[in-house]
Length: 486
Ligand code: SF4
Image (cartoon, rainbow, N blue to C red; front, side, top):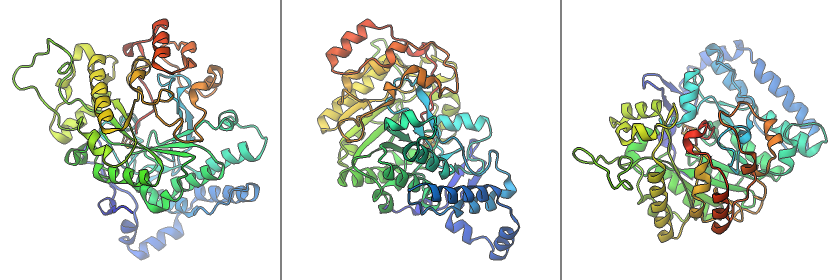
């Protein structure tokens, strides 16, 4: 079991570093004067909890799922935050999404996403796109990330697997398309140790034999009570680690457990025989764009070096015993780069060639040539260390999904889960476009070539044949909005 003493206060720093708020933790709760606590409990009405509680009782009668979840967490939350009148309420609705319905992550294998918390994330990574977007609307950690109503999940699974009633999710769930857990927020933040919503969610997935992949920057998932719920035939766990430089991690990902702890956690799960992966994501520039690949690269004075993402990380990850690495180069919002500069004193903007790489109005990208260099070097290091390697294209445009397939150790799956976890058979690339449209919440700014959606990936020779035959959109032509942040 991991030591998490350094996280007990769950301090959050807001965008300006001035807005510090704390999560309710056992430690914080006990510091509240007992008299005052009792008084407020008597006075505060809890309509949300009351409704959730009634629905839970109804579900208990209808469903065979043996639920022992402690629903009073909603009551505690409602009582505690009643005076704050949380925008959107104390639970997050609409936990599940199919995100490749109408956007640039249409080729993703695991685009059926679920978040068990929303409107914030205690990890508070400065590069986080969810943070950038939700801060604009005043939703980010205001004042804390809120859990989903677990009844929503129970109802969904009960309806699909225990009845023949109508459900918009029936077609997808019956195909057992794996869920990706953790997108706009980390479902395994340490606050789940108190609320246990994600823990209950794992129990539901186990009961209905439903496959899932967890994306996390936390080591909570390696705590014994969580490990006991992870089934080798159903789950894959992906730990994201942008750097093993924990001094900078503290500044750039202020709420995450250290990389050291995450690597210890991945090692523990790998030893348990679970399918584990480390995502080196987002890859940060090491030197300015063009340093490795442009023969005309010039710089006045010493070429700057950012000591964050390194190629040597591969050896540290390999030493944990995890069999698989996924790399994904970062694309950064101006908001993220400004916040990183405020926190670290390092301005990364000069690392980017403004003319060449500001390909969309919002994001800062590296050139495709330079990105390819990083991926090839990581592949070389992985081969040497005996670790499998794939590439995640999300955020960098669809062309990179096709362009880097030769670097995938598993030619069937860029997440490298198929043929590794027995229940991973289906994926979201097989969902028909007309079905995807039913889930679309926004229009894509560029037309989708529907034919590309179902074109098989495969051996390099087949891919190459295919690559020559299609018109591939370049990153700059794509709508780069995605909903993948972990
Ligand atoms: S990047 Fe992921 S872990 Fe970090 S704040 Fe955003 S959602 Fe949380």
